[in-house]
Length: 535
Image (cartoon, rainbow, N blue to C red; front, side, top):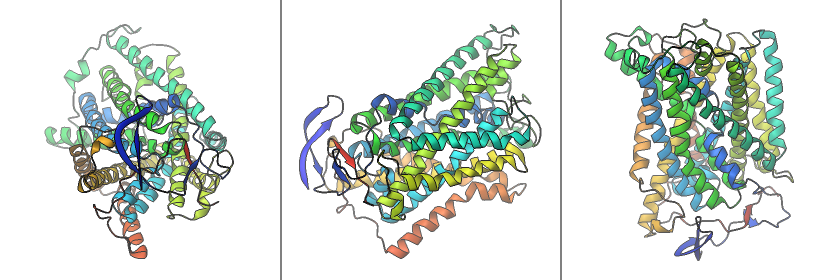
């Protein structure tokens, strides 16, 4: 190993602190190489915008309706705030590691390097499964939105096909065009959310055509759900309704960890990733908490139009809470415009999840934990085989066209992806705890880190313990009355991940990495790119 001055992301210069850099990593090569490699073509503005709004889709625009119905307006805001703070701390855990070594394969490689190669294998395939399943979730959600205008069920397959072709085409075009597409759609999402917050405030203060000054009426009359699933007493119903919001919030925030996939293709990754991680809290506070707070002031949790708020089979399943508020307040046309933006948001979110899942499979192949053919890269930097294989799972969106309808498919797939996100977050927390302890055991100062948070290591412990509790109780509604399909879709990720971990550990005879032998160096060199190991 050699020692070089650490890169100062703020000043673009070297500081006086020394950081050890790995002597050689055959994946990390000069950008002028003619070997197939990942292209560092994502600009700082694109990375920051993707970090703030890239994966915003169904969770905020559609799923927030379920949160208000289950937990009440106050319960929804509190639930999203608590989970948002936990996710923010998780991203700071991940941020410290990926800014330190942006040439690594994200948390897939970090967990192998700092904990156990078996954990890297399990986390990598679990994350791939999670993101590969989330892409069709977003397509299904988009089809729910389309039903606002066209309720003909025989048209659904056409809409799903068009969206899938669009997502695959954008990913095939290369990361340069992917980044530009996501930048402008993220800009559209942010502008829409800010506009909706202003509209909701005007409606709440009585400025809409209905002249109904709502104020804090719904916060005062029904802050929490006293009738959740007809549970008695009311205090128990309020608590369990609030607990249901935590799981819904986890679905809404799911995908933030996919920011690690961008490391391999970001320009000046230490600076851009540092800025992107810091932007996460803006996303949580402004785009989720404030918007949920304001829409919760304008709509009753008992409104029968809320998506998934009433009995199975009722309602149109094509209405988001923002759209309901606009329509019931008497504002014309705007509901159609907002629904169109929600449609593009779901498409954009699905597009990013397809990107993340293909990169996860590429990283696994690079680590020798997936068939090496998945590391094949086109001249434009696209891992073509990984993308093609992952795209096959997006065909699950056609579940929306079969028996049961859009809501059943949406619920089933959403349950699978929700728990997957929380398992990944727990894995990131465990990995950071080991990283922190490894640096301490080897006498390496945290001052060498280009990005660090004062919350650590206690923030990582808080993330781990909190999400383990939420995971354990996330499927209690499937127990009484018993629902095998709900129970299966909720908890399937747990045995899947355990089987992956112990299976790889048994066949490869892996061991937990010793704290004193752990590789806490950075493999990143300024101006380098990551070469495909297949070539």
